[in-house]
Image 1: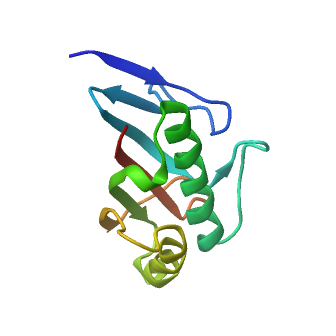
Image 2: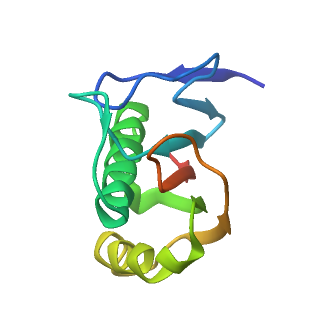
Length: 124
């Protein structure tokens, strides 16, 4: 098994000893992304904005890997509050209007001001 580390300045730097993404064979595994604007290093405000920013970060990482949001097979979503489920779906319907990926959504304790974290698995 060969693996390739993916890193881009178009997404936030990892906050610990992990990679933004890893490619194994023809699959890209993207680490959980928060609603952090990579140009400021700060959280954006509101759940819809954080979902959109997390997806922007995932998109930047996937593009660096040679993939795209259209090739996402599975997303893992961690919401601070499940009452934000409809807001999450609103953003997802705009980003994935046809053939949305499989998804798991769970409630989770997230650090600081963060309302959502999203990880992804995509093909090349």
